[in-house]
Image 1 (cartoon, rainbow, N blue to C red):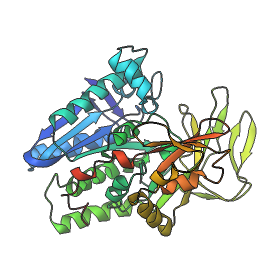
Image 2: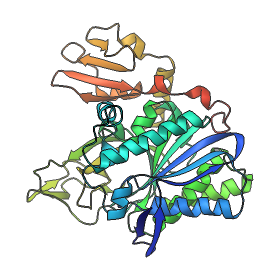
Image 3: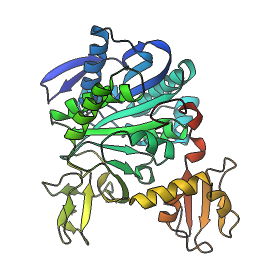
Image 4: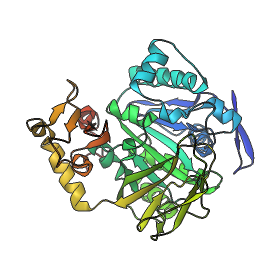
Length: 400
């Protein structure tokens, strides 16, 4: 049992890897919640204990199966983001193969990954679709709650049911996230950021999110009035409009950098040109244009200083949906300089010396997130082909 402490509640609780597992009537979905993937983010653990305890005490009928899982037990015990390496940055195919298949475990977080990987695989093997994986987080800066997800049409459609801002494109910058691994398996997966680490509202926001998610997935039966009430609670928690945003810049902190964010920035804040953002090795880093800042770093651990985001026009979202459904990307490989990187036909290799007109923004339309392989090549990966749409076609949210 791991001791988890909450500065917010001034309470402690004890947690196993599986906080709780409730098996209800057959025919329902399997909903998996993660809390504490970062050990200094305890709101999700306390919220899960609250909601699952309420379901048990009230003997509420459950459809399908519910899991509440603790992410990084060692970091939760030591009250830090991670012990040796960020657990939410190591879910990469080559790392998973070395850790799980070859049993080469070098430090604490790799041991955590090994246990979580085996647990997720066991759930997928023994439980029934449709599957939902929802990861509960908090931030180091003040924030309105928001959703972050990998950009697939399936994820978009599901997430659109929450009255919250939705952030696309995180996978282009953060490599090795747990939800990216799960999304590549084809399942609905998203992260919910409920507030600042030490803000007591973060736990309440997480509780409301969990309860609403259980009605949205039809894990719990609820009246239309109750669903509307839960939606209202979530909507009240956010001061930011319900729209899609995309990340277009990340400030990387190099290991040798001395980075300190200037105080007072909050998520989604607009900052004027010339604003001092951070001190990097003692030199002020300024905004070169008017920017909308996202997830400024106010903690010692972490390699991402801040992001810039911008709203995505509705016409752009509509166009990307149409282009993906017509599989326009399969036409691109007939053009010079564009080839499939693998036989799975989910990754493009783009030689920009030949296909020089293809930009990252164009690939975003088609559902690809691109990264520079070298100065001449882009590698663009698509998750649309992996999405298991067929497992969700009978759900109410899918058919709305």
